[in-house]
Image 1: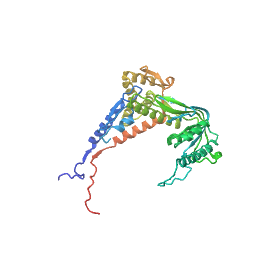
Image 2 (image 1 turned 45 degrees about the horizontal axis):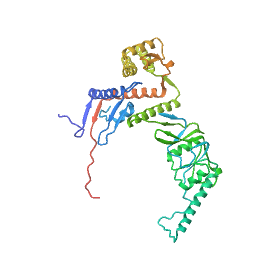
Image 3 (image 1 turned 90 degrees about the vertical axis):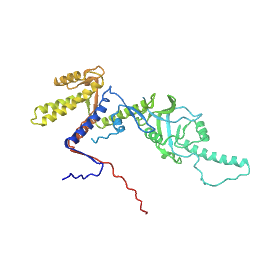
Image 4 (image 1 turned 60 degrees about the vertical axis):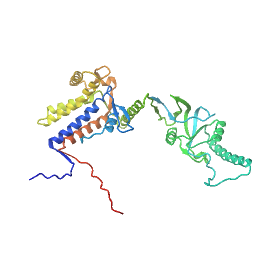
Amino acid sequence: MAPVSIFRHGADEEKAETARLSSFIGAIAIGDLVKSTLGPKGMDKILLGGGKDSSVTVTNDGATILKAIGVDNPAAKVLVGFLLDKRIGVNQPKRIENANILIANTGMDTDKIKIFGSRVRVDSTAKVAEIEMAEKEKMKEKVERILKHGINCFINRQLIYNYPEQLFAAAGVMAIEHADFVGVERLALVTGGEITSTFDHPELVKIGHCKLIEEVMIGEDTLIHFSGVDMGEACTIVLRGATQQILDEAERSLHDALCVLAQTVKETRTVYGGGCSEMLMAKAVSDLANRTPGKEAVAMESFAKALRMLPTIIADNAGYDSAELVSQLRAAHQDNKSTFGLDMTQGAVGDMATLGITESFQVKRQVLLSAAEAAEMILRVDNIIKAAPRKRVPDHHPC
């Protein structure tokens, strides 16, 4: 009897050892792709996008590499304070100490009724001047209400216009207009103030405070620097690079560092780096394998060998003799030197506790769990089915 296929035309199926071998090859290829990026002397990858607007990315970030590639296999400068990307107005104070800051989201010309589509007819230029004076009087009243808050810095989400700026400058108040919404939100958070839109009750408005406001130049950009903020938690990081690729890579590296730092704050425990933790775990697994009878011992030894691969890769990427260094490290751990790891600055085995090389316990734990789960999932595969998505049939029937 001829074999019967339950799959539609174009579907492909791999079974048993063939399926497992295909999964193994895919996993090994991914590992070979990213392992050269590991360690302090890891190499970069150039990712070139396809299409007309192809982008070039230079990175050694594993997550970025894996997101960018198409896989067919199934298996700076730190400033202590806050920076606002704006300039101080003309004739405004460029530096204010012990600043009291009013942060607002208000239009300086909205205290009148706007009727769209209407026209105003006048029979002389004097009447036009009267209208302009009335407009200025409205703005002046609003500025006076703002000044009653006892501030020396006014930051508005919207435009302030020239006449109110003149009034603020005459009163010695720094006025900053058209601040971006995200910047205003963060500024209110770090200065301890709040964003307001009405000024009739100054006693109900929460004013922000900082020790110093000044205009600074970073490269060719003019920014406003707020230092000594009440919350004491503000920090702005300015990244600069010769090319966009260098700048993007610096941003990714900073993002990775901040993620590790955030995890370390949540889970304060740390482990020693430089392959020290992997060698400790490999030694513990090997010792357990020596006491375990049967085939389970073979699996344990393979797991221990996989753990020892990390210091091997780190040494290879640094250009050192990995076999020599890993054997020295293994001997050190057998001699109960449990804090020893690889010092890639000197190209030798060193004490990680003395060198201060540590890693986040939470990150290390998650790496081990994810790797073990991925390996177990691949080992349990016995069938791979590839099929194109079902094509949508056009509906030619009238509604």
